[in-house]
Image (cartoon, rainbow, N blue to C red):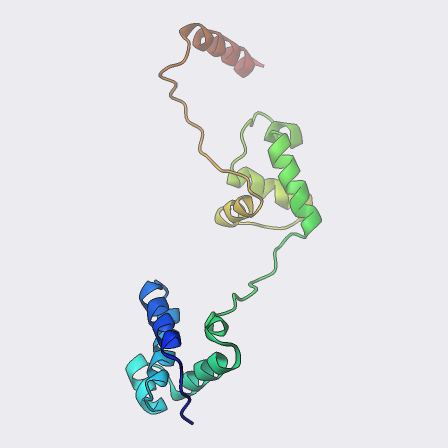
Length: 171
């Protein structure tokens, strides 16, 4: 079946094809453009390097819903280990408490490893360090490594800090 398309539709697809950086979308646009030019399905499949069945699927999607229908739907992915209530508890604990306050004596800064231990103790769910960093990202918690060099710090305050720190270590 040969469908005639308006010239502006062809130009729009050509523009989208040149603008996209996604290889999958480029191929989809390429299939539709070749189809609009009257190429046979087998020929389109060979040029695009995909199966004829895939070419048919792209063309059907285009004819059913237009160019917007070619955009792939993001898959839902694996469900989270923690439910929404537990994630809120993780957020509030990490944002407003130190590890020292939740049972990790002598530790003042959260790390992914310590957060993994706390989540396991609290919920019985085991996370990897990278998985915990992903959870931090999802919860909009920023993760930075502590720095210990303060070049422009006040020398008096530094001396006071060292004295306080020595006292803290003794206790």
